[in-house]
Amino acid sequence: MPVLKREQSTTSSNSNRVPKLPVPDLQHTLKLYLKSVKHLIPEEEFQKTQAIVETFGVAGGVGEMLQKNLLQRSESKANWVYDYWLEDMYLNNRSALPVNSSPVIVLPKQNFKTNSDATRFAAHLISAVLEYKTLLESHALPEDRGKGQLAGTPLCMEQYYKLFTTCRLPGLKKDTLVTKTSSVMPEPEHIIVACRNQFFVLDVMINFRHLNEKDLYTQLEKIRKKAEGEEQHFPPIGLLTSDGRTHWAEARDILIRDSTNRDSLDMLERCLCVLCLNEPSGLALSDTNRAWLMLHGGGPDRSGANRWYDKPMQFVIGLDGCCGVVCEHSPFEGIVIVQCTEFLLKCMKGSPSKLVRAASVSELPAPRRLRWKSSPAIQALLAASADKLHRLAKNLDLAVFKFTKYGKDHIKRQRMSPDAYIQVALQFTYYRCHRKAVFTYESASIRRFQDGRVDNIRSATSEALAFSKAMTDEKPKVSNEERMELLKEAIKAQTNYTALAVAGEAIDNHLLGLKEMAKELCMETPEIFTDDTYTASNHFILSTSQVPTSEDMFCCYGPVVPDGYGACYNPQPGSILFSVSSFSDSDLTCSDLFVKDLEVCLLEMEGLCCKNASVV
Image 1: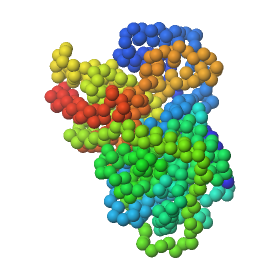
Image 2 (image 1 turned 90 degrees about the vertical axis):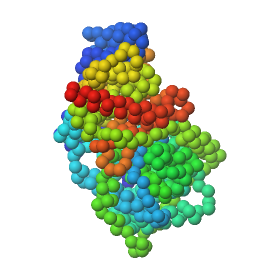
Image 3 (image 1 turned 60 degrees about the vertical axis):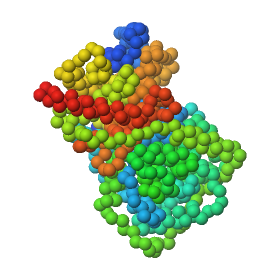
Image 4 (image 1 turned 45 degrees about the vertical axis):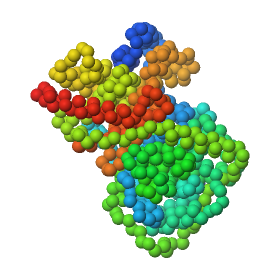
């Protein structure tokens, strides 16, 4: 019988081709840490921080002792930072998953003329999912290779094997990531179909064979009719998974007191994925509105309860053509989601739907609705979760903006890295809006190493700040030639830090490892980690990520702090798509104003490059 167990870091199928993550040199990290904060804090605070860092790094001191223990840890583990990072980034985080944590892929808008068209699309998609899963099970998925600075380098494939086998369970203080394993005789594999806030079990393997597309269509039609025809009220239990993690853990503890609820939770937590069949949203389906709906379902009054956020992969198909993928982020990174989704879309395009309108000739068991035993306590929890989701949806300020004046090809012609160029543009934009620079996070893949996830590229460099000031401030007057030199320096600084990050030599994972090692050794927290500067340096007002896609789709996510922006971008040959998010209740942010200034900054940078074409 399939069981759930705690997720553990394991080597991937290509582990013999992928090296272990190095532990950076301590003095290198401390020097880079001071450089990354110096221009972002007052001089008085920097002097204090510098003294603390020097004490921490003194020969024979606390830093060297913790470094020695980290090196020992790296010898016994495939990846010395993996567990520390997973807990710090995700499992210890108490925020609700929608908007705050779970990214989404917005698929091309579909033009369904009938409800059956949507069902047909869903059956085609699930058929492609099963084909992809077969590739995973046979380890036949082509090995990913690095691009850019890592061109041709084999990348760790472990994250792919968690797409359909994991589930995040809520805890009172810390969540648990669990993985499904099977014995020799596994139960039939199943997906969960969410429809009208109800959950149905759809077995996708019967008599040791996957259902074909026609059978999937038949089963999904049964589910739709069953959900529509049921007059009995069913509690929208999915709302609970949209709440803060501690509140959801408390609610789950109440739910599992009843055996009916335990059985339903077990089926949800062991499913391959969730298919969410949504009613029409009633909104005009612009890029911004589709992204807004994907991030939280439009709140409890639309499709916000028709989800199960603990599952890594939720495929959302709306009758109005609003479709996408909602991802629980802790098992894998955005590029893995993109690669999987692109495979599914290509599979669907490459193999036209094999459906016919006639009913399946197979004798299929009727899909089973999951049952729930409610109580006044559970009803109160549901009402509280609905209220919080409503406020979360209302508070999300989102702007999806396609910049069409030029794209990555034009940037490359300037002999600049498109990613570095866009990162400098984001720094320039924030400075133009607020006349200051802020701590910034840009995810950098470290999949060239075993169990590699990400480290942080600290894009708010002193060089980017100097360029932003030269482009914005009226005094002192700076010539175009000088501005161009400052832009080139900013691009160079960004490129150099990126190279360090993808090589495993950035500072954030290393500092986290030293901090967690002190905790593991039951030491008092070293002052470097209680210093206000360290706290501020981890408050990322700009949270950014490049998520390139080759299909007509895009990724977006929410900000990571109340007064910040989430900025996801997708460089194309002749355009750049940005998805910028913030919170409406912050007086310090406005997504629409940010993208308007971003367009101005991109145009000014292009104008500068054109004026100095002979210099570039």
